[in-house]
Amino acid sequence: MKKFILAPALAALVMFFWGFCYYGLSGVPYRALEQAPGLAAAVSSLTVDGAYMVPDPRIGEEAMAEAMKTGPYAMIQFRKVPADMGSTMIKGYLHGFISCVLVALLLVRCESSLTTFGCRLMFCVVIGGLITFYSNGATSIWWQHSWSWNGMTMFYDAVSWLLAGLVLAKMVAPKKA
Image (cartoon, rainbow, N blue to C red; front, side, top):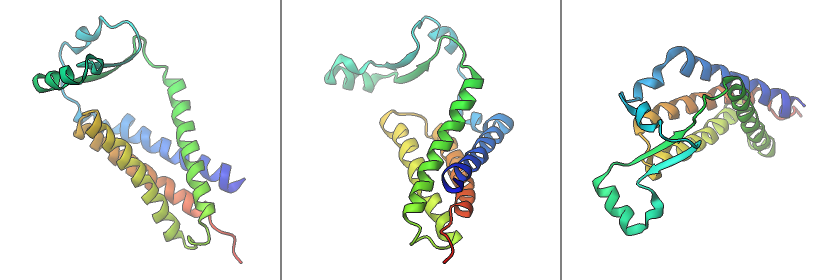
């Protein structure tokens, strides 16, 4: 129970608190956003929640290539109604918890090789680094998302996995012989 419930629950709580400090209290990541006067008015004609892309990739490969040359390119995640922050917080914590359960599972499967705290911590940091680089790098490369915004997100994710790794490395240790 300690390895698969308590340790991930505590690690996810540490990640959650770090997110509150980074995004909620510091506001640092929002420095990567550009000013967009009139953007709210421009997207107010949208009526259906969803992802929108300009140019629309369904116009065909040749037309898309031509449209990409001249621009603009935009991908918008649109919600007509504001997000329910209570529900978002619960989903965010559960996301962290499930992620930490999966890393705890990996730690247990590799415990014969990860006998020291330092080895377990490095394992968590490398797994977290892989997740961070792959997912955030992909959105900048394939979807043209801003490197400045994704850089802020990558920093947040890397610190999250370092903090979660500290908890998991301490609590998901092999039994002493």
